[in-house]
Image (cartoon, rainbow, N blue to C red):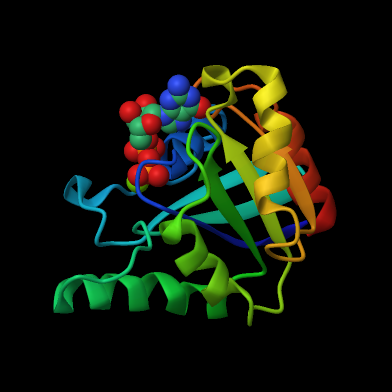
Length: 166
Ligand code: GDP
Ligand code: MG
């Protein structure tokens, strides 16, 4: 099982935290260039029978500037190079224009897309159903995983599924 997976989402949903968590256990390579989000950051997760390269993208948002434009283009061009995509959202926030901007761009992507609902440690379990409802039908998700990248809830199950599907 091997392949490339991009992690997309609005700024601050927890993409880097997730990457750090999964790479933290089985570290191979982690480049974090001058803590800038302008560069794509890659982490390689390896086990005896799997190798996945995770690509952390700069938060995609509606560009406000030429530089912003470039960053968004860079994040979107990553989509051509990967085998699957993780679309990460924040369980605390309602689906907003920032999410819809990304959803629109993912509509043409013919690759498996996983919805990761992060920060579930911050919400009441009942609220999770509302969040899932919010995204139901937005894209043809291959799978949906509520997780806490910070505390680790459901993260291993998520990775195991990604590996199995690759
Ligand atoms: P990114 O911009 O998507 O890469 O988001 P970061 O990984 O930098 O996280 C943004 C903030 O959210 C940081 O303060 C993280 O500690 C926090 N955060 C990330 N994941 C979680 C989570 O699962 N639970 C909670 N409570 N906070 C989180
Ligand atoms: Mg980040």
